[in-house]
Image (cartoon, rainbow, N blue to C red; front, side, top):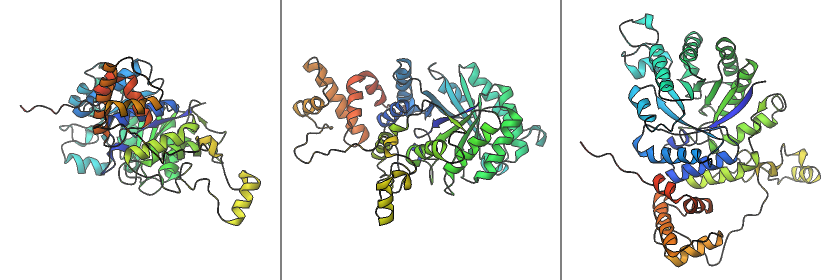
Length: 421
């Protein structure tokens, strides 16, 4: 039976949240946490973008070392020859999603008459079908193992063209078709029908990329996954931690997983990738909240402060008698329940102006020792740069990463502006 896999897009779409962003070290830690959580794939960035290149390269090195494994790291790229060639220049990238708009509205609004959708509309102009097929074939020639084709604004694209586009993508060698509900326009019933139709007609694994403009991102993602499975193909659901992303955000990672595992119409009927470990949810959500500087809403699904809080007499009484009266799932399933200990006395932190004694104190608490003063000084310098890089105190896992992989940490934090001329 086909399965549902999770493709997290926090490091590609989540970082496009207006007014916010992540340092490259923070993106790396998120990749490590997603790997621990058993997430199938992280869309980890833009491999053709100059300021991402060292980060992209270092994370692919971590994958080659087996540190970021078995998670797949995939890049996102527009359907442009130059950007695709640039993305594969290092020879390390193996997975990519190529994106182009498919709706009549966006084709006219973005391409201003330079490109048509179908060749028969104007044989003298480039058309979306040939552009897409040519770029898929190019990515494959350059060494791509998995190529996903994104239909941007698929939810506002007519059925006939969407089928034709997906069939052409499959013929060109695409491994997946990504249905993008770019404006959060779909509803669960509509997306189920369309995805099942595409699955049955085209026979290609389908990714669901749903935005939350109408508050339906999770519902549409799950309904779309049902449509793919019922149509006989694997489903790949795009998520973002804490629903980060453009405008109202993407489908929330934890909510999607919980819905597939616990909802009455899905639990036991649709198979989620067995490697997903929900007990990492609390850790992942809290780190993303800290890294983005966005508090987790009190009523956030599963990880909010009130997700397992009871105050009214009837609810408190019922929950104390049997948690199943008022709790659909256990807090332990999400990795919650351990007390959080916060120092309220003397505390030494490591930052951009730290000295060697304070630095050794911080690492001593992490039970990390250095072989000699030279090694300690080198790591201290990296920690100083990391603090400048993130503009906030480093977490324990960030400190551990810098100490364990100093050369890769140095690469991740190195950005050289393009020279003029």
